[in-house]
Image (tube, rainbow, N blue to C red; front, top):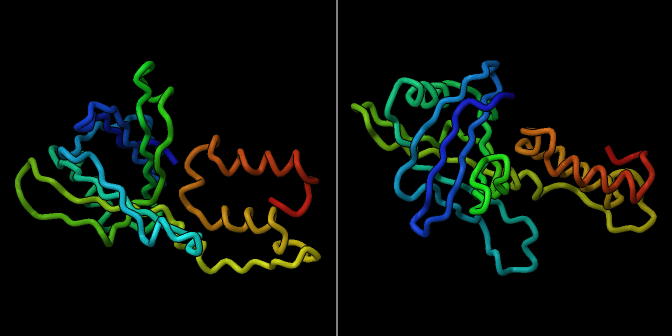
Length: 195
């Protein structure tokens, strides 16, 4: 999976952000810059974030993507005709002391959904609403055994490995948190039955 589209912008408070879009089918090394509308992006939650009995709170990001050239239009066309899971997105908060992507902090990660993309056949420039989800909804029905005698995926390490494997956005980069947590499990427990 290669980085194909990138954007840098400042929000109304002057905070800097990076948005990066990865294409599963792209093998090139060229990245194309794009622009976003004045909002930048909007993060919304699905569920009650204040309810302790609701452990899985999926989120969704909407991006006002500005179609200004053929590269931008190509992304929209490919979203409309491609398969779900082809495009992944990462949003980074820019560190004010070191304003480069390498020093930025990962804020959100998800999958662009083609069926939730709105596109109008009109002249440039135009604003298109891109929608991405974090895939956490896939975790709502993962079975878990509370028995301390349970083995395999009944154990917390197996349960977490099972949950992480259901999250497509965790496969974007080699330094993903999946690796961080798996490395913790390797040190904390034995190396069997958790990968």
